[in-house]
Image (cartoon, rainbow, N blue to C red; front, top):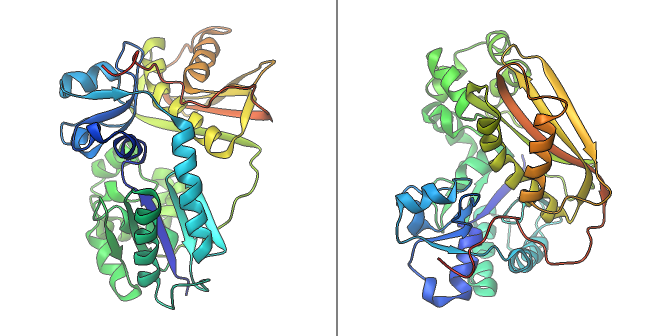
Length: 358
C-alpha cells in the first residue's frame, strides 16, 4: 500500500506578496488587475472572507471588498519560491509529481529521510517550507492520490489531515459530492438532479448507471467513491500540449459571454505554461455544443503565446473566425502546443495590472 502526501501551498501568490511586503500582512490582497479587463489570479484569505476568488473579474472583486489591494503579478518571485519548495520535496522523496507551482504529490512509501510514518514526513516538510520560505502549506496524507488531495483541503490554512485505510469508506460516504476531485459545478448540478448528494449516494449507483449518465467519467467516479485509485505519482515528463477546459452550468450562446467563460481558462493555461517554461505557437480552441458535437479551431503564430491576455486575444479571434458558433455552447477549452522558447522578458500571468497598487 502506497503512502501518498499532497502538499498545497496556502494562497500561494498572495502569501508571497504579503511576505515580501510586510505592509500587506493581514490585509485583503488580490494578485492581478482591478480594471475593466483585469482578473483576480489569487486572493489572500483576508480577501476570501469577502467572497473574492481567483478568476473573478477585478471590478466584481472590488465591489465585494472596497478595501481590496491589487498587486502586480510577479511570476519570477513565485517561481523562485516554488523552486525552493520543490527542492525540499525532493530531499524527502524521489517520486514527486508537481501539479502547478504551488502543489504536488509525493510518494513516500520509500522515503529518503523522515522516518517510516508519512504523517511525520508531512509535518517535517511543512516545517521546512515555513523555515526556508516563510510560507505555510497544507498537507493531506493517505494511501492514494484521490484521498490525499481531498485531505489537504480539509484544514486550510496550515493544516494537516490524514485519511487512513480503515477511515476511507466512512469519510467518502459522508463527503458532499462537490468536494470530489474531478466533479465540477456543472456535473454536481446534474448529480443533484439525480439525487446524488454525497459519496454514499454515488456509491449506490452501479458503474453502468454512472457511465450512462456521465460517459467515461462515470467509470472514474465509480472507482473513486470506493477508494480505488491506482494512479502512480509520476515525476516531471515533457508534455506535447498544455490545456484546460470547462463545462458550463448552462449553455452559452453569445460571444461576449463565451469570452468571459474563457478568461479563467486562459489564466489556468498561462499558469501551466509558466510552470513548465513551455510556451506554444499553436493555439487550439475546443467547442462542445449543447448537442455534444465537438469542433476545434486552430491557429499557429510566428512566436509563442506567453501570457493569459495574449491567449485570450487569440481565443477571441478563433471564436469569430470563420464565424461565431451558430449553436449554443456547453464547454470551451484552450490548449497550446508546438512549443518554442519565448522571446526575452519577464514572465507574467498577463493580467491587467494597476499602475502600482490601487
